[in-house]
Image 1 (tube, rainbow, N blue to C red):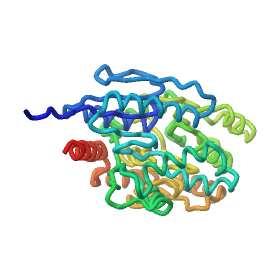
Image 2 (cartoon, rainbow, N blue to C red; image 1 turned 180 degrees about the vertical axis):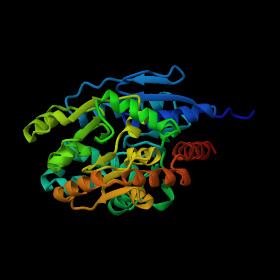
Image 3 (spheres, rainbow, N blue to C red; image 1 turned 60 degrees about the vertical axis):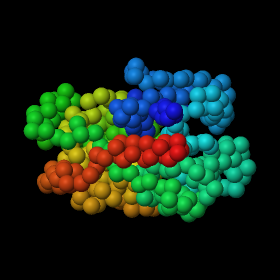
Image 4 (cartoon, rainbow, N blue to C red; image 1 turned 120 degrees about the horizontal axis):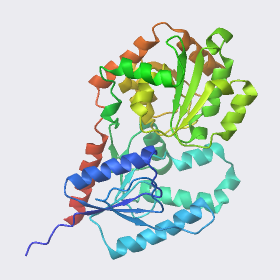
Length: 382
C-alpha cells in the first residue's frame, strides 16, 4: 500500500504582530502553502491581531527574564512539539537548530556582534546562544536550506560561516500589488493631505516602518531641523509605524520642530500614505532588505536611503532617489534631503520608480519561497 504523503508544514516564528514585515511575509507564505493543499501549524510565543481560522496556531509563553532566555525556552518547547507531531518540513523565521528551511530577514548576527561589540561581549550567554543558533543554520555542517533576500547579507554569512552555495536560494522581493498607484491617486493624495492640514505648496517627508531606532528616525528629525527657514516653514515629517516615540518627540522638541512632526502610529492604509508624501526618508542604521523602498517605487514616491539597506540597489537602478554611502554623514544626508525637497521635478524622480516597478519582478517572493519549501518537503519524504 502506498504511504500517504505528509502535507503538514511547521512554521516557527518567535512573535507575531500585524505590522511587522517578517510577520507579514510569514503569513503570506503560510497562506500560499495552504492554498496548495498543505496543513499549517504555526508555533509562536504570542499572536497579536486577527488570527486566520485556517491556520493551527500553537502558543507557548516563556517565563524567562531575558530575550535569549525566552528564545531558549521557546526552542525547547518547539522541539518537543515537532518530535510529537513530525511535519513534512520545518520552516523557521528565526534562527534556531533543527530547521529544514530558514527565511532570512534578520541579517547576520555574527557580523553585527563583531562590528558593534568587543571581545568581552562574546563571553556572554546572549552571544553564545545566538551565535550557536545562527551557526546551526549557516554553518558548513548544517543542512538547512536558506531563503535569502539580500546579497549583502549572503556575502556576510558566507564570509563568517562558509555557507555552501547549494543551500542558498535567492528570492526576488515581495511588494504587495496594492502599493501600485492607480488612476485615482491624485484625488486620494489631495484628500489625505487635507486631513493633515497640508496644501499643495507644502512638502511632506515620510518615514515608514516599525522600529524607530533601527530605521534612523533620529537622523530624519535632525534633517528636518536643518532645512533652510523658507523650506522648513512648509515641510512636515510624517512618522508611520509601531515604536516608542517619546525619545524622538523629546529630540524634535529640543530642536524646535515638534510642531512639524506627526506620529501617526501603525496604519492599514499605507498605499494612501505613500502616494500622499513627497519624499520617503529611510536613513536606517542597518536593514536586511527594506521592503518599504520597493513600496515607494511602486507608488511613485522618490526616496533618500542609506546604502546599508539590501534593497537600496533598486533605488539606484531605477534612478528614483538618492543612496547615502557609508560611513553615514549626517550633514550630507541633511543636504541631500533639502536639495531633493527643493527640486521642481521631484515627482518625475518618483515616476521613474513607478516605471521601474512595472518592468521588474518585485512581486515574486512568496511563490519562489513556496517552491523551495515544497521541494525540500518532497526530498525529505523520499
